[in-house]
Length: 341
Image (cartoon, rainbow, N blue to C red; front, side, top):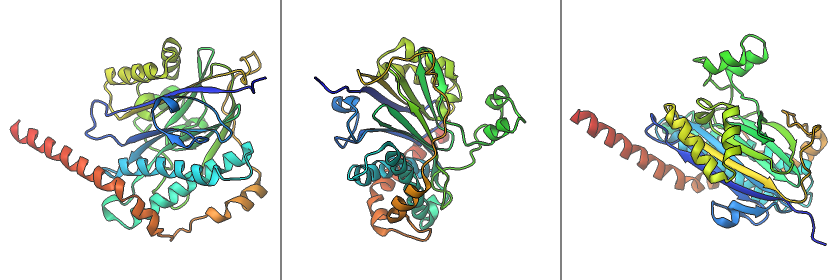
């Protein structure tokens, strides 16, 4: 008798938008069991293996090429840590997976901070990170910043992450409504990101997946113009993730496209998943790790605040040079048209 399985159909797409001259967003989709990260057919549709899958969106900041460098570094570091520390971990429990995911973001934060601290041209660069790890029937979210994750179930969208932003803090304190927050000029002020500070607080949330659930990860270039209920309608009307990604990006661009727009969508099926019932409404649920496990397992991966990690820095030379060249070319094009105007 075949073992119950879970399949995922996934796609990701990023777009410049209508007003920005370079794209500081990035995303990654990866089958951690088979160590493949791409949009090739074997990743776009794959079975969730015993080491799970990773989906992540990052929105960089810092000006010039710094933002795109920070987001690219974050995605690469998170994926690299999971494909080494997690894939070889003798403990393949859900809690250990969550710990490794959080650990990966903490390491990415320290590496980005260390890298920027040695280079004045990118000092202060940072990035949001919304990372989704799927293991078995569970979804673990790791959150820094204000990119978002939504779960679409039965045509309804539920936000699985909480924005780490000034307006969300005011909403939580009862000093601002959700509607006021959406219109506020301060909605883009975030309280933390990967990179600017040596330490960061990673928020973990958990969700049990059900049959035909759809996960949507996106940068604020989408959520700044497209509401959660509209996202749910598009995903419901377009079962193919690639089509849904394109439609959502088109909607954001039609409404001005004031920022880079990035969307990653994953649809889950398979006989290992229960059908959604009345008692299975998704919700924002914080996941607490066991403190003893944290202390025992993370020590070998701690990176000191002053750790320069030269080997890792050399690894990232491949990111900054192309990014700086791209920024220079765009600046030259803009100057050319400005002088002809």
